[in-house]
Amino acid sequence: MMRKVIGIIVIIVGLGYVFMSFDFLPVIGDSTAPAHTHVSDYYIENALRDTHSPNLVTAVLADYRGFDTLLETTVMFSAGVCAVMILGSKSHIRNRFLVPKKILKGKPEPGVSAYKTVNKDVMVTLIAIMILLYAIYVLLHGEVGPGGGFQAGALMALSYIVSMMIAPDTRPLFSLSKANAAALAGIGVFIYAFTGLLTVFNGGMFLEYGRLPFPVSNEYLHTIGIMLIEVGVTIGVMATIITILKAIIERVRFDDDRD
Amino acid sequence: MMTGIEQFLADKGIYYLTFLLLSFGVYGIIACKNYMKKLICMNIMQVAAIVFFLSLGQKKGATIPVLIEGLTNADSYINPLTHALMLTAIVVSLGTTGVGLALLTRIREKFGSVEEDDIIRRQNKL
Amino acid sequence: MSPLIIEAILLLALIAITLAVIFNRDLLIVIITYCAFSFIAMFLYIVMSSPDVAFTEAVIGVISTIYFIITLRKIDRRCK
Image (tube, rainbow over all chains, first blue to last red; front, side, top):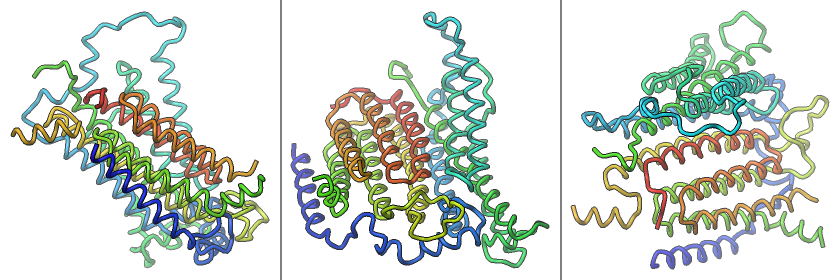
């Protein structure tokens, strides 16, 4: 009861203060607002010449502010490692780690499905392949349309989750253990950082794609650079999501289980 | 009538609603005693922050930030900077949610519950 | 109808879902409601004409719902 009163007081005081001091905020849709006057005009007008990427969000994310995205990917990687470290302690208690496939194997399949012509395993295999194809499409077309590395990584992880959770008896498209997934996330971050280091070795600045050591014209070097770091981001995000999922799901102990 | 509502919304209304959403998230974090609800309310607060940033980046009569051939004017495209920042923020929120759920699982193993009252009672008993 | 009015309606829906999350007692219902929350947030981002953010929110909302439901196997469904 006490904390509800405290919450309501905090809301009223905070909202009152915010509503009274709202005059400095610009009108929505005003093209002379402070957010549009400093650097974003330069991004919009010069993105095609500088980065050769029609999607401005990808241009800002991967080229102008590539260092920012490198650290964001590192944050995701360290989140996955943190989840493994939090849930991987007390290794002597063996029976807390249950692999779900072993639980399901002993039990009989309950019930009869209502639609006998639809096989769950076959459908899931088809859907997982389609999601994977769409993820690759999103990864390759991230510069032209909406999409990019983060979305492609999440979609790839989603295809793995679908094939692992709905049909655990069938063979998934690719299988990853918890340790392998964490290592793969590290590899993704390494690909990103190594792309930056390649430009440094060739005499440029960190993540300056014009100095990549490939024998193509300057126009394609930016495309190759953005593609390389998006592959790194994709692998990092996919492996991190699978790592956290596995770390939580392998620790699950049912409420009716006895030690 | 309709233009009056639009003028009010563009002037202050969207900001009011966004901060109302943010403050309900704060209220949920303070008032709920279940740790999982607190995590969900944290995600709700984050959506409010994202909406605030995106509404700062809007321009009237502008299109989405994918370049169209022949249209190079800076006033024709929405500010892409806020979109790039918020895109990474959403992905990082997934990482924080995962770490929070890992901590939740550990708390459930150690204390036998995720309710705050039970945990405080158990802590006093130990 | 102007986009600002649609934004206001969607924001009101988000506030209503937030109230449902705070005052519900069943955690499974809370999680499914949160899934609806991220779905409506996705529409809000589309109306704000940011397709990249909407795409990310659509995928990430599904995955965080899966995380919550996996953790729900471990903890109690009722909450006081």
